[in-house]
Image 1 (cartoon, helix red, strand yellow):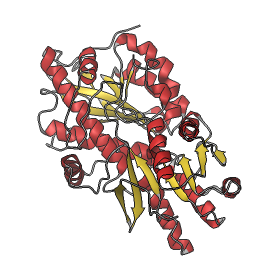
Image 2 (cartoon, one colour; image 1 turned 180 degrees about the horizontal axis):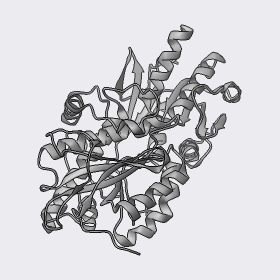
Image 3 (tube, one colour; image 1 turned 90 degrees about the vertical axis):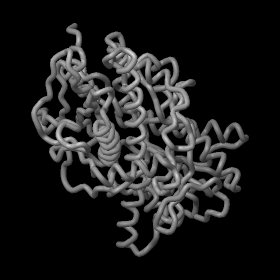
Image 4 (cartoon, one colour; image 1 turned 90 degrees about the horizontal axis):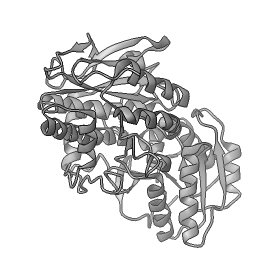
Length: 436
């Protein structure tokens, strides 16, 4: 099997177009805060400082594309900010984007292309449990060549611990952490009849299991549950699932799904007369859910989004008391990062800020710091050096009020509770007093 070239020998950032063609893009080549734009492949002599290219497979098409688009935008903003400030010891950082449409098989194909064809420096920011899990056996194989996946957008257990420590580094807390915080907050607020609506795959079952385990620890069980198939759109009818949940007379429902399905279920549950608190995990994408429900509210004349509760792995992007949030907002405003147009099929409503792009931005900041340390330690970045630098991060202060520390397998561990009310999101410490 051929070995990848040294960093800087050939570095490109590409976006897979329909039919498998590649569009070359690069970060930070011309303007201080330049974004990914079509251009020529960047090359450098092995002794020169060039680019470190990171391969990202995510959904840029299909009903769940908001996750891939927003996470990549946050990463792009962070890398553009890094390049404007010297990169990683003079090395530019760039993304190679490929669309998997939230399909496991496509994610596998993309991973092979990243490693065997593009020889990317590392993998970064894969989006979704079923897609990333499908690539795990391949990632373990590529680990012998030093290939590592950093900071995927998933909280799945199978991508944590000994089973994946050879090839995956996680920045965010797990779904078990998120569901534990949600259940405990609901119980503390007096809600003891909890139901679950979830995606019928490894992601949804992971969240369902987290709810089940935490309720069992309190001597309780799930009062009702319903599931749906991955890939559901907002136009899908969930009246049957809403009826199944309503039959359990819950006072709270935890949703473990993607934005279109989650929003459609909340819409149909309200229409079915279900009066309960609706809570969702971070991967459900709070901003996309509220956007969909707000549009439906204008049609139906009822407020579907009021009082929605979310577990989040970052603080609210409205919290400008935090230096990291202020920097995120500043860079997003200055750069307005967008993936290449060829990846965006159809109209997309660009978000100024979002929880998902904030998470991507933080991931990009952590990656940049690790790359700087790797370059300083060896005179040039290496795959092994980057891995060691990430693993060695201790007490890194991003300005979050929580320091990044990879002891224990996850860089960040805090789970936040956020509620949508008054037309905006806000972090809350308790769910007491929040009415359905």
